Length: 184
Image (cartoon, rainbow, N blue to C red; front, top):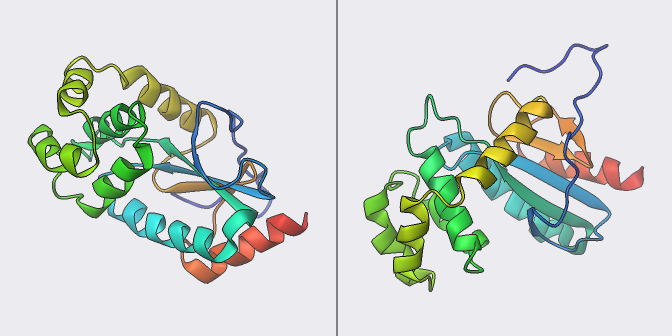
């Protein structure tokens, strides 16, 4: 993704964070981070680790929201993984599946459900049925479309309080950006 020029307006989040989103941290946190990610994207896995540390360090001062942006043309398992996370979410285990999928990016296929479902306490039959019927494909597509409307062109893309963050995805610059947002 290329950064906007010095006189370009910052891209804004087109769809506000709401009850449909998966979030970690207090709803009333002073700063909300929204990540558009793809479970097969190596850079997203790295960003996830950094965002986890940001949350750890800043605790109740930051809320993290994850939205799906499967880059299907280069990541053939990304759509499946996003739907699997949503199916797990329907069983109250979105974040557990989110974390599992990022840890095991090289094992993102239907045959790997037998590894994840029991470990995460999921109903395997329901999970397989939901995936076979693409029950959560519309939810994944809605996230993807909201990303497109927000100017997302690749993953990971992070928004801080609704404004696209085009800085480094390393820990210290991201914490500094969150601190700046908290002062606003």
